[in-house]
Amino acid sequence: MNVTVESASNESASTLRRRVIVDLGREEVAQKLSSAYDELRRTVRLKGFRPGRVPQKLIQRFFGDQVRADVTAQLIREYTDKALKEVGLQPVAAPQIITEQAALADGLRFSAVFDVMPEIALKDYRDLNVTLEAAQPAEQEVEAALLELRQRQATLRKVQGRESVEPGDFVLARLEARVGDKPLPGFGSEPKLIEVSPTALPADLADLLTGAQRNQPFERVMSHPAGHPVAALAGKTVAWSVEVNELFGRELPELDDAFARDLGAYQSVAELRAATRQRLAEQAEAAALSRARLELLDRIVERNPVELPESLVEMELAVLVREREQQAEDREQARQPAADATAIAPERQGELRSQAEKQARRALIVDALARELNVEVSDDELAGRVAEIVRAAGRERQAVADYYAREENRARLRGAMRREKALDALLRPGGADPPAPSQAPADRPAPAPADPI
Image 1 (cartoon, rainbow, N blue to C red):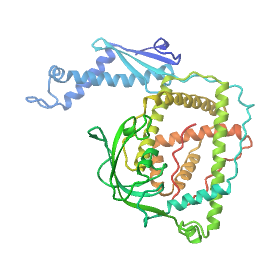
Image 2: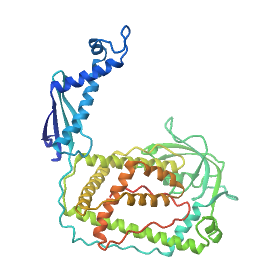
Image 3: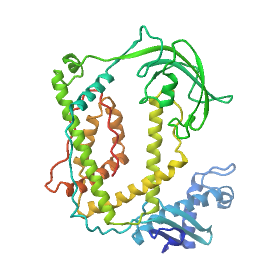
Image 4: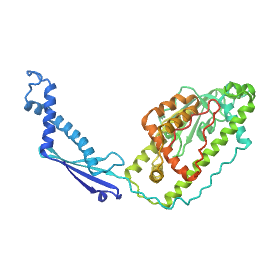
């Protein structure tokens, strides 16, 4: 094996791109081919020949193309790893393989093109001062949180003495949508339970239903903006056919000791209120710490310009696109009716790339900081954080536990924790621990999985 390393900057604007060229001689390739044919001869069955007795010429005639393809792929996998170890280079992402000579009779020549991480020597970061402040929750915030908790425990009752839809109602309604002669997918003739509020529906669909009369079908033509949150409606003029069959109102439980006891963790509404206040204070402190981390990191980034590997940006962009698609799917599933909203609008792609570059730059700098400060996250620390997240997940504990059972998600969380610890070492030189999550009221939504800074 002969290995040559070249800069691939002539093919890319990045100076971090490398091309590793691997030349394998005839003898190495011939030995692999011979072994492959011998293995195939032991197992192949052809009419008129006993197993293991098929002539090689016939095997080459019938299976030669497949054997050569398999051997080429095997050699590339094997010798790419060997070549990278030999030259001591670690790709940011899986290399792009370019086969330059694949006749095999004359040997094999291929190249692996990839990005490497930049060398970063941090400077001017120890004198940065960032204020870490968290405001205590106001009484109206506590009351709003308790109201939200009551709303999650609410029951639906049919509205009596009123026939028209008002904001905040739940309606059993049929919404059909057509563009020209074509019905839009996701909107059909089956009635669905819909919450009529801007938090549950796009504002124009909430307006469409507000004021509708029970059991009085109507039609309306609406033009929806290009940036509509429901992708199926974006930029379209839609003919709507609407019929509201039933009206329901949300009946909230009384905020009393019985309600607190029903939640399972409190003996009185005073205990519930105190726990809610504590939770909001901890959330405010955690949010303040998160803001301080990002402010500190951005100031370090500003003082330490770094070239970005293109493949790292592409990896961050892929994560952002998946997150946006999942968020869109979740929003559409939470709304009624649902529609496909997974597409990323073209005008948002530039915005996402800019965000991906920012996240990649932050990741490079904070990882360099963690190395310089010798920061690591132990298995016990990782297990403790996973346990905290699962414990705070409420009814979604099993789903969150399953998420963090996957090694790639645990590795992502470990990276996030390592970056947090590196920044906290500058923010909290005394070594104070960040706030720990408190016991949350029942039915609290599960937290989103932690993302790297």
